[in-house]
Every structure is written in structure tokens, then in C-alpha cells.
Image (cartoon, rainbow, N blue to C red):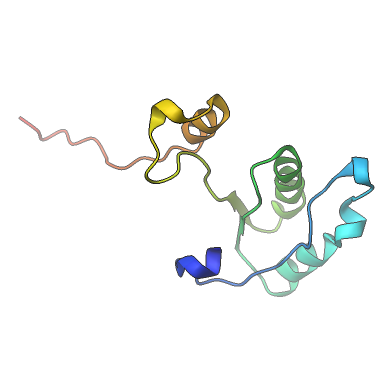
Amino acid sequence: AIERGHHFKGLYHLLGGILNPMLGIGPEQLGLQKIVTRVQSQNIQHVLLALNSSMEGDATSAYLAEILSPYCEVERIGFGVPIGSHLEYLDSLTIGSALENRKKISKPNNHIQ
């Protein structure tokens, strides 16, 4: 999906899954030390996490942010209101995510008269 959008021009690192202790999938099973090694060896300054917005995706993102933050800046793609949707039809989790991931679109202009 990210490649189809043609907006991201960086490198990829595929995890091959997400953390799920109930299924026995931990950091070792996903080989998460490989991404730490890659960040260090290639002197990567910025990592953008693109994981699904789910309990497991959130947990995986939090874990990766914790282990990578000593070496680089870590961000996560934004989630929220899909383009073309109507606010009155969105569930409360989607609205909450959109509010958490808001971004500034303009700076205050003190010269308006």
C-alpha cells in the first residue's frame, strides 16, 4: 500500500509480523535485533513505523520505539479519518486516533487586521 502511493522514498525493513505473546510471538521470533543492528550499522537517523492500528500493532510500535530511540528518531504513521468519510459515521476509536494524530496546518499570523 505504501509503495502504491509513491509518497515514501526511503528504505524498508519488513518485520514479518507483530508481537503477540498469546501466540508465542516475541521479539526473538520476529528478529527485532536485526533492525537495531541495521540502524546502527547504516547510521540511520530516522525510522518511520508503519504498523496496523491494533493492540498488537501498538505494542510492537511501542517496543520498537523503546529499543530504537537511543540510536535514531522514531515516528509512526498517522491514523485517523479516511479521505472521503463523514465524521458522523466514524466510531469513537477512529475519532480518538484522529485527534491524537492531529497536525498543525498553519501558524498564527499576528499581522491580520
